[in-house]
Every structure is written in structure tokens, then in C-alpha cells.
Image (cartoon, rainbow, N blue to C red; front, side, top):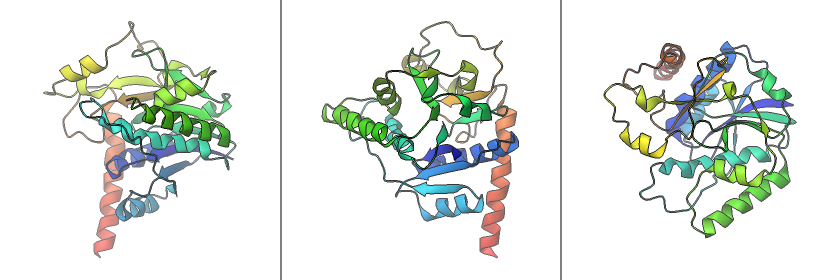
Length: 260
């Protein structure tokens, strides 16, 4: 059995999940989306997932208990819930997708890659990026990843789930870069100060994706395209806005039914 899987760690990322679900439908994926949630996801969000007919499964929150004061990205603490996907042993293979993606064409062929498979974190590091992953869930991998995470916590090391995954897996199969093309939305948002992002996320190499057959865009850092009310000039903004309008219409319809 195969599934696309996402992780909803906080209620304020719900729209990202709803957009991803609509996106997968519109590219005619033959596999459905499973959303992992934790005990902190409220009842209203769960009802919304039900209304959109998104299958979800509750797993225990994985908290990375390290002081992130002064760190540019404290939300990294929430991303360790992603490790729960390695414990989905009822599935033969899964393709994990972050909630800040825009999928431009059918990507079902990702299931043909051997586990574990990821695209590089270009242009920002030589590691692999955990925003899109092909995985054959395995209990040993899950237990070992959690233990490695606990070791980092004991040493009070600030990092993200991506660092843990890259350190643990000695061999990672490479997915073509067009399946995970980085976009820093902050630099496209009008009247938005991007200086602090440039300090944190600077390219390690020259990077030009103009000639690539773009399949997945990955809007890293903040703001996310479902969070900003500012107009932005990124070339695919109209497509993401289309999906946002779709889910907002459905959400309003659900709320009107409740009121009635």
C-alpha cells in the first residue's frame, strides 16, 4: 500500500495541508494524502480535515526540547513530528511532502525511487532536503532516529529534522532537483524586508533552474504562500492563489452549513 503523507504539527498550517490535498487531486495523482497530526491539533481543524475528506492519523507529538532563543527559525522545534513518518510500517512505501509546496505536474513516479530518496538542499547546502522524501517505513529506522534526536537534545544542539535525517542515513538516493526547487518567498513579497533572510540563507553556489523541467516548488522559510496577504511577484503566485481560493470557498461553505 502506498500513500502521500504530510505532517500537520500546528493548527496554523492547516491551509497548507488543504492546498496540498487540492493540488494532488488536480494533478490526477492515483495515491491519496494521509495527514499525521498530534494531540495539540484542535477539534475545529480535525473537522475541517474531515470535511475535505483528508484521512488523518494522530501520533504523539515529538518535541525537540532545546532552547531556540535568538534562533532565526524557532519553528524548527515543530518539524521533528516529521520523524513519525518512519513509523508508518503499515505502508509499503510513502512519499512525504512538506506543507509549503506547489506541485506543477503529476509526481506519482516518485514511488519508483528506492528508499530513502531525497533531492539536494541546493542552493543552500550540500545536504539533502527533507521537504520531499521517498521512504519505506521501518521501525528500526524510526527508533534510531528518535534516539539520535535525544542525543542531540542532551547536548543542547540547535538543529532541524533535516540534520538528523542526513546524519542517520549513510546512503541517500538522489531525486532530480526539479522535484524540490527552493523558493524564498520573502524576496518576492512587496515591501517586505528580506535582509535577515539573506543573513540566514545565502547560496553556497550559483544556482539557475530556468532550464529545468519544474515539477515541485518549495517555499522555504517564512512567510509561506498561504500565510501572507501581501502581493508577491513570483511567477507561479497565480496558481497557488487559485488553490487558496478553492479551499477558502469550501471552508466558507462548511461554516455556513454549521450556522444553518
